[in-house]
Image (cartoon, rainbow over all chains, first blue to last red; front, side, top):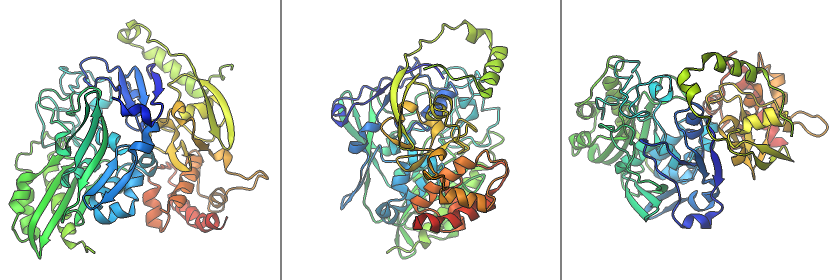
Length: 339
Length: 192
């Protein structure tokens, strides 16, 4: 690991002012990065992929940024809440099951005890060409160098939201659940606080795969707001993996359903494991609205969701896997017994 | 503090790095080192003052600086669970925890489980009773993780145990006996 300076945010009061995080633009070496759970950051520092010269440990802010709060308006999750804490929260499990499920099905128990929600949504791709610096070509790691995955081992790579510059898939689960529930992300930075729809946090790679989010230099995610709604309780996360537990999604679907009998009053769908960023399938939602929900209509919606899929050889099976995962999630959500 | 003797891993690592060092990397200026930081780590109820480079992980601090070699370095990238320890009672991976970040927290390692009279923790005893290991390399991590699993309330059934212990790999595949040991230890832990 390269040398770095380690600093702790001294106390909660210190973070009331702007958090001196530093640039996340990958064009120049990143001077400072925020350390929270460390499960992605330290891993990628050991691999020499990330090379911060200074780490700012924000875990001392847990008392201010780690709370789970539920009221009539909805749920507010502090960015420093740990994955396990939210996955095991009785109220979250009852009122927003898709959130708890997406967290419980991610990583391992140890990692969920360490990783925070803010860090979780910002986790980096598992593309092996990104993670292995002995490959010269990776536009995400080394802008302009090319993409070794296009003609390489790409079985787990994305089929939606890809570009000729990058097909790395977004690896997380929780982000899809937030997206399906129309969450809002709260941010603090040098210019003060702001918030935006969670759906606007991540970028598709386009011609700058190295810029993964719309966060500005020095900004820090502080919380997620999840609005209450008739769809929240009937929400489900289905994750298909190469093994039963402790693996990234080959395909996943977060769905939230508002049903009127067997008709769909409203549905929200986000797809994981298949796209370069957390992926909202709005066209598929529109295809289902007002329809009777059954296997046939769910499959028609799934066809729409993957209409624009582009495969790259080893991942030719992804669209079909993704479609079936979505159908299963919709039908399982329909069968849920809601108190 | 005198530097600890170089272990096998260090020797092999250094040898491989020297042999494979490409010119491009060798030509780079040496990165600027940062001075050692002084910390006090609370481990198994005792305070340990240490002076460490900021890069030292909790796992390396335990093994290389404090002679607590129970926690094992399997993958060193958060995938195998062999380095599992308890931090404030929660199971975490010591290989992905900076020693500096562990200051101010109560750390428990496998060495801290037995009682002052040498009586084994119920989970240790259950692993013995159920022959829940073969080579034993993953065992300290399995036992620490199993204690966390029971304390979290995630050892309700064999399925539950398998799911919530999936972060601890055993390449000898002693899994059935590990599950049996945890099931047996759970009531003993609750009694104790």
